[in-house]
Amino acid sequence: MNRTIELVKTIYEIKQLEDIDAPQIALAGRSNVGKSSLVNRLAGRKALAKISSKPGKTRSLNYYRVDPDGYYLVDLPGYGYAKCSKQERAKWGKLIEAYMKDNPRLRAVAVLLDSRLPPQKIDMELTSYVRGLGIPVIPVLTKADKPKQRELAQLQTQWRDILQQDRLPLSFSSKTGKGEEKLWAAFTEAAGA
Image 1: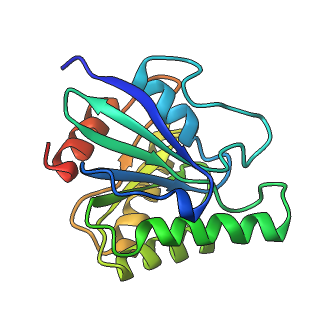
Image 2: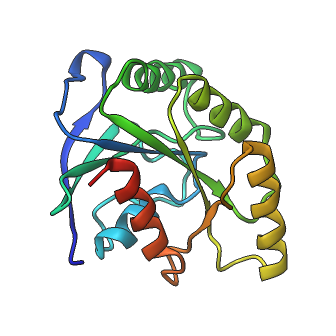
């Protein structure tokens, strides 16, 4: 299928949040896990989402409309070691929480996990928080072209067990396109598109 992705809305403050009457899949993950690269790969464009060598470039909720499916990918600010003030980080946290809580349009959260790292406490806390809200988690191991296949398979099993899911997490590489079709299928299924 020939899909297009367009940035249609950017939100910096809670008061800017509004109901967008379409299914949404949020993209969440640590700073520098590859959320912007993933968006660009799926869009087939290099500069739709801004990429930086400094973690924490995404400081807003960015709504990307996926056509012809009609759902949105919502890129959330990264968490972890972005260089910013505690106040700024707290502001992002409140914005993310306001977006996620009681949002009937939010069908799933794709939690991006760095395939080069063992499970991190901060990632486990996020998945636990999302599941506590009753929102399905789609775990995605990014940078899947970096580790050896055996290491990647072990990490997939670890995360499956941590999340107590039947399916292994998806593995994805924005560099090679590995896992792109499976990712689209998971998003489309979750959105009900």
